[in-house]
Image (tube, rainbow, N blue to C red; front, side):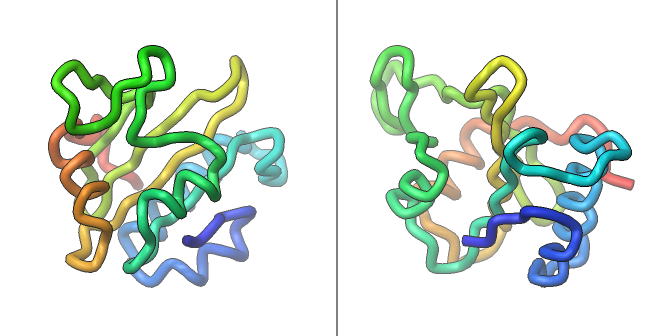
Length: 134
């Protein structure tokens, strides 16, 4: 897992399209201010080999469980607890609003070494990204 805590962390994102997307989100969230995760939200880039349970522990939130009704991905009546899941060219972006003015985004690269359950979840529930990142 790679937590993005500011622009300097972007050098750790290997995929240039994903790096551009995360950079755009940093800029949009901070709106000209220095980016501060505790104010603007947390960004996490999933790495090959990361497992869902580890990601959920790291963000402190069950990303594959609906926190309202307790259903888990794969159960008949499951609906995601996320605000949106967008499919971009090389990654999925899952956005969660955990408080009125704070949340986090999980970027899931479209890579064969990504957790199979997480990838299926993204493919099943993603919508095409509204606007390609600039």
